[in-house]
Image (cartoon, rainbow, N blue to C red; front, side):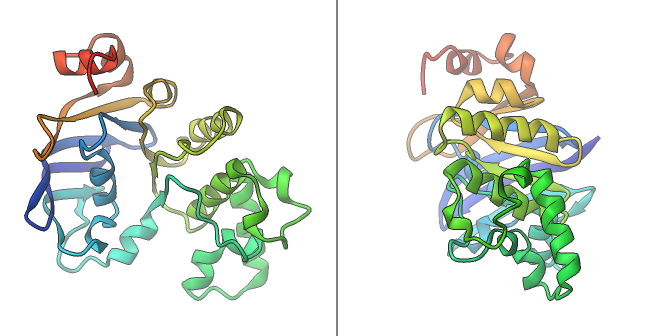
Length: 257
């Protein structure tokens, strides 16, 4: 069953056509990885999935992106509501450095007007447990989030993302700034989270895509200055072991990109 559906999606930065004609069905409660060379548009496509692309001046999206059959770019759709339903974790961990660990987790809830401290504490614990961080921070919840290690900060950001009860989690190269042990912790977490969430991850690390994802989308571009495009989308095992396009095979084998 598809959670997200992209139909003839074209993405622009002003007059520049960044990504052309993307058609894709992203399955529910699974991990979908976007891979491809730098500049091919994979992070751009990711940002269109929760309407983050349009916050860039003169950026625009054409085509249709459906969440459970409903167009997230419909004329009466609130972008803030979309971003609550489709959360995002960025490449660089971005906790609020002076805010406590606990308040970092529930920042979204507080912003939306929740004042019940008992409920906020319950959600903070539940979300930190969900991000496999509770045992490491339960005795210092009042300490600043900026005092955590890089890997812990990234898991704190994941806890913050799931605290608002999204249905989809987008992750833009979430491990690129982490050491191997922290990377493994986040990958293990992704495996667990897909039981409750639909996850889409952009990664430049093909081994990571092979380890964590159920589906893989390979994006590429003909030349610098040309639009990126979706070359192939299939089960991860098929993409890595028996790709249908020579361009995919060459990329997986390290012959370009």
